[in-house]
Amino acid sequence: MAQYEPVIGLEVHVELKTNTKIFCNSSTAFGADPNHHTCPVCLGLPGVLPVTNKKVVEFAIKAGLALNCQIAPFSKFDRKNYYYPDLPKNYQVSQFDLPIAEHGFLEIEVDGNTKRVGITRVHMEEDAGKLVHQGTISDSSFSLVDYNRTGVPLIEIVSEPDMRSPEEASAYLEKLKAIIQYTGISDCKMQEGSLRCDANVSVRPLGQEEFGTRAELKNMNSFKALQKALVYEIKRQIKINEEGGRVIQETRSWDEAKGVSLSLRSKEEAHDYRYFPEPDLVPMVISKDWVDEIRTTLPELPDERQARFVEQYGLPAYDAIVLTSLKEMADYYEQCVEQFNNPKAVSNWIMGDFSRLMNADNMEINDVRIQPAQLAKMLQLLEKGTISGKIAKTIFEDMFATGRDPDIIVQEKGLVQISDEGAIESIVTDVLANNPKSVEDYRAGKNQALGFLVGQVMKATKGKANPGMVNKLLKEKL
Amino acid sequence: MISLKEVEHVALLGRLKLTEEEKKLYSKQLSDILEHARKLQDLDTANVPPTSHVLPLQNVFREDRTGEHMTTEKVLANAPDRQDDYFKVPRIL
Image (cartoon, rainbow over all chains, first blue to last red; front, side, top):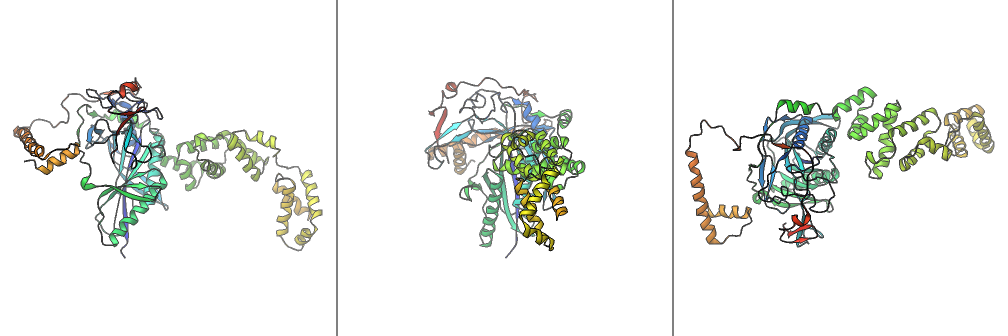
């Protein structure tokens, strides 16, 4: 049986965080009543004149720079013609042969290896409207159209077919999302549709130079869905090849509920977009000065920040990757370290209990009620021995739920660690008197008896006794 | 000459339903139009720079400030059909 190698390229749409649409001054705010954020331009009424939002061009250039692209000195918009009710003009204004940015790359880490994935192009375009159906589209007899999203600015980022596994595709999307989020031009929320991903997938016998026929996969709304859809599609294509069949070039839609992809249309009957230059929008000449000015607004990007975390805080590479994958998380981390200078301890808490509770509640960093200063304060209490490690977890959960200060919780619940030698000593004496068998065992050389006795002291103090002190006192008395 | 098949393709893209007579008629008319436009190929453009736009303008931008939206009644005034504040259209799969 021949070994097959998948070849994957991704097309990612990112919604830009501007106040207004790309060619008119209608609002882009999410959640308005249907068709309330529209005007003659985005509704495509006759005789209107679209004018480009300068911020969109600026954001697209910023994305291009963050992705190591060359910025086009001359760029223009084109009409992409297709007939569908989500598009009131029957064409989408996009960019065809002169996109704003080209020839970039980003780097991913898979299994400890760094790999460079090429970025073919970044272009600007307008989003389409939203079709609403009662039930599903297949059992509805009509569509309801909401044009609020029509004209919301997007950039489309097209990768080279450089990825060779679903894991690489995921890593690419993660990195791309992180970079774009750092630049601040988009929220990149897959669930809300501000980041959308299509995949071009083909397989070829290992060692073959030429690409196989590809299928385009659509409708993957999460990282998990992308992963599952790619695994499914690669298997499907390998099976066709093994059975002597031929993969046809087509668009397939991922059905998350059923876990299968279904053919939408084959390329033979595919769209014939008849691109031509948009006559209503004049070309853009992008000066070097403008590009340089935008370059100065670029923040520290994930790769640089990751390297700095390793260098400055002495963190393991893994911690640095996880902490810098989200700008908000990295910011939170640094604010906390500023007030509690034990970088690895802070990292352990953020990557551990913090992330666990956050993910369990499906929250984002900004929703977390514990402020960085409060986490730092708790870690100080732990370091000073005011609270034990076990109690710290309890306090942390309370802080997470209520956002209260750790010292208040400690006082209120009487969780201060008992480090008073006299107090612990009397408990130790009691425990020894009540457990003569264990005392004998220990003296006979059974070391595990000590663990049992420590446990009894902790139990008697509800976990509040300083464990180091308990150990010390027990050993002395034995 | 524009073939009947090409006429059918263009009609499909524009969602037009054509009779056999119309297809024949448009096949000839479209060919004539293209033939007419082909005359441009005879011009000497050796010294004319290629361009995508006829206006001597570039970099016309607007600032990112929201303006007035249309009232919903106006937005939907020309809608062939509506439901609440939505346009209502035939379903297209």
